[in-house]
Image 1 (cartoon, rainbow, N blue to C red):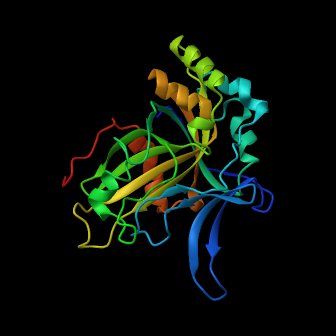
Image 2 (cartoon, rainbow, N blue to C red):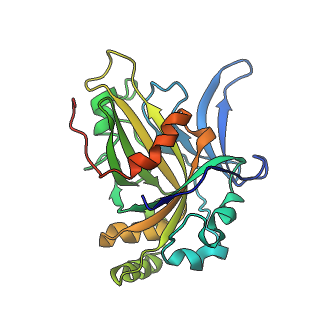
Length: 276
């Protein structure tokens, strides 16, 4: 944790924002179906279901094809950001977001790229240890995207915080020359800044189901700017700063849980041992 800003109202009416959250409906009279992150009116990601007892989820959908970088702040974000309010970055990206309450968090992250189903994958590791495999597919949940793991820490005896940075498009879509440019800058000591809209989803399975029952606090950052920076940082094992705009009204967490995030994020990173 570098610094926390004050909660503030940002964004445009949902019909005007490039990015918004939406509850998909089935047929007339049916209940809500999927919780979605929309980009340019297309479903980009399916998110954790509203029930609170379903597993944590961020699943990339076929129509997730757009990044949301802004040329107007590109130069400012090439270097380090020392304060969330510095350089008008929040206001610039706030114009892409749906109107709501956001908590700015300026973080230092050391990203580790994870491919689903391989070493370090949360969905085939920690999630399976708690919820087991998907009963229909007979497989772990599959997010359909590589992603970055950056931090985890203990919340209390019955809860653990996991942090993820999720690119809007996979790293294989990144421009190789730009990744190499950022990698060289980082090896020379530059610490660039990425920007994300974030959610905190607190999920816990129904009693008696899991092998290892506890609450999973999923802090998920969806990248608005920084796709090349995150890949470069993971490649050369260097830190990058991340300006997170936590969507308070769109998170599956109580206000008191969101308020605890700055203190939790300031703790040392620590892995959880199953059963403790």
